[in-house]
Image (cartoon, rainbow, N blue to C red; front, side, top):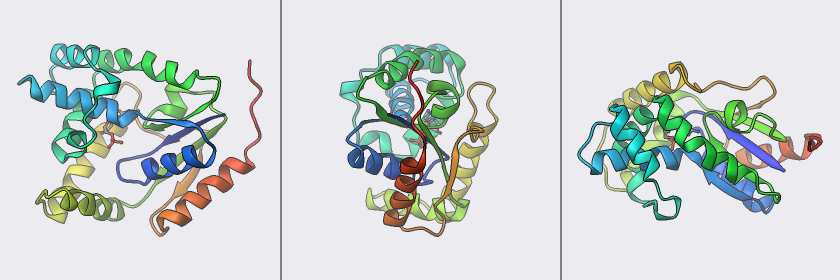
Length: 211
Ligand code: DC
């Protein structure tokens, strides 16, 4: 079974994808981590995330097994990720690794922005997870403060809105809800309630015949 989980930043999609992977014993790929690692790779090399040549070089050099899970969670890495993700040549480099991951006969859960629309258009179940901008800002603020980052609610909300705008309006693989994706709004849901709602959707979904 392939489960595609898409949605904007801090919507709860990562937490839901992790829960679904454990619950259904599937492996999981957080595709946002790939873009974050590429963005950070460009910054580490002293480059600009919007510079195509630098971003493509970082994407080609990406080692999935060597991603620093702590460093990629910073707000700086998130902003850089959103910039490299708007470059079609970067997306092309990362496409094959994501498709290869999804091709595992055991199935998989992938979460990101374009999983149900571009990476796995034939996924068995597609979820589009969302939440209001203030709710997402509040969640991300807690995460960043726990990491020791000092940023105000207003600053962070403006950053998230800017990333949303870029992710939704870019020409290549923009974020949108696939026509066959189930919408899950987590604004007023706890983590447990969100995870349970996601499981109900997956359990109710008819299995798709494999080609
Ligand atoms: O989900 P996240 O915040 O970790 O994602 C970081 C950035 O990567 C986000 O701004 C958009 C981009 N991204 C993407 O374009 N496509 C994906 N499949 C996953 C993430």
